[in-house]
Length: 97
Image (cartoon, rainbow, N blue to C red; front, side, top):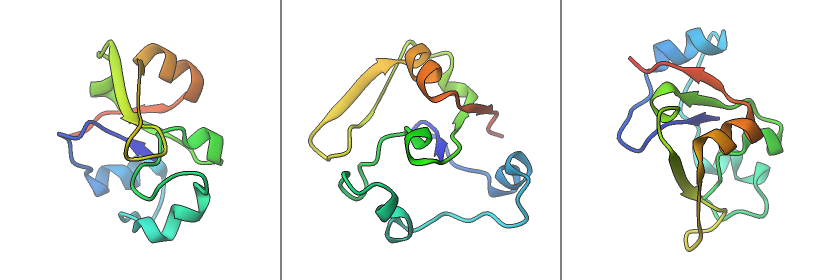
């Protein structure tokens, strides 16, 4: 799982390098929605660690005081400090090019 601000784009070449994978592509929601059975499609929270997924996070988020994201539904939002998110998720920080 890659967590980035809505204003950023993923560089798939860099993502291959960061993950050590030979092939990386954007998954369709239908391919992973079963991993989040209690969430609405498209509203999955960035807690991949709870779903046995590694989490990569953009370095641009670490300088923010707070982050906000869907809470499993399109009508609920979670706002929390980035420091708390990092403490709970323990993501690998990546630098976007």
